Image 1 (cartoon, helix red, strand yellow):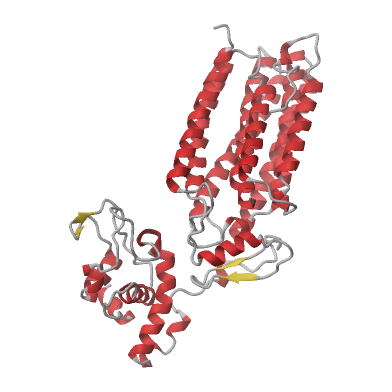
Image 2 (cartoon, rainbow over the protein chains, first blue to last red):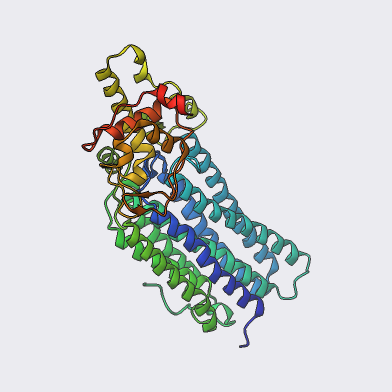
Length: 184
Length: 283
């Protein structure tokens, strides 16, 4: 077909990731409002933390697309700078998730407190794991690009960028389904 | 979706700087997100369908312009959007089957829970809420720094010693029954109502009804044994149920006696009262 093999593999993988997150989101949405005891979502949700996390991840997607742009232009220094900015965005997101989880546990919401806790932590926890994997991927990409180990920096950056944007669009879905819909 | 089209998939064209397009997309995404947050901060209500549509638009915008699906080889779009559509259909069907398109709270006291949700108590609340039914304690506000908040575990009622049972052995049979039914309603609501339902009717063909059930009307020993040890594959009134009744040894003698008494004295049932000592004897 004349398309890059790695890119084709990444899109195939992201298609399967749709099913992975689809199963977790389907479970969360099926048990929505079915918890028999608290804490309930609005007892623990913190709009400020969620908002900052959301904007942070959105901005990281912009940084990522800029990194891809400069990688394709052959400007490795600018590409590395935007890769670094994207990684900082991911780390900030993970920091807020650590804060949010410890906060929720302190208020009595654990994996085993109720259906909300079980489905919420599994869904958002796996998303956070994907963010962490993305940060590691970006780190190794930056390191390999700087050392000149990559045959085609532009293609490799684009493929890893696809993974990063996917993690961002999953958050777009989680942000609406898990958080926003509680406030309607 | 109102994203500008001129930048679609334009990352590869050397004579055209796509950064301006990326910034425009980012500005639209940010503005949409700010708009979505209106209900998050209680400024106004937005309908759920609008939030879903906006979220889908943001999703497609990122895929089209940041992931360059628009303008790239169509095989990538097919690989991604076909699974995505299947997932959306699956989740929609699940939500229809489970009836969760609109929230209907099934908590311990559904009216109070609904009021709690609708009140959206955020503000500066600094208090701990005790659930009337379960005795669970949790903070009603997320704004307490967690380093200064008292530990959740420290606020839990010790399960072995329910306050209502103080001086239980010296009470009259009527007083004992009143205590058992009162505590039992909460224990039942937390542990049993998920399957047998708050009205004891169960779900036809899935979870057995407790109303006019031979075990609930019969000797207490059989009833206690089923709660303590569980039950599976037994036909009730000619119906065999696929789902097993789990064992509940983690509940205390007081909790089990209360829940069983509540079942035996509610919804028109006329079974005998069960005291904690009877449960202890059968453990």
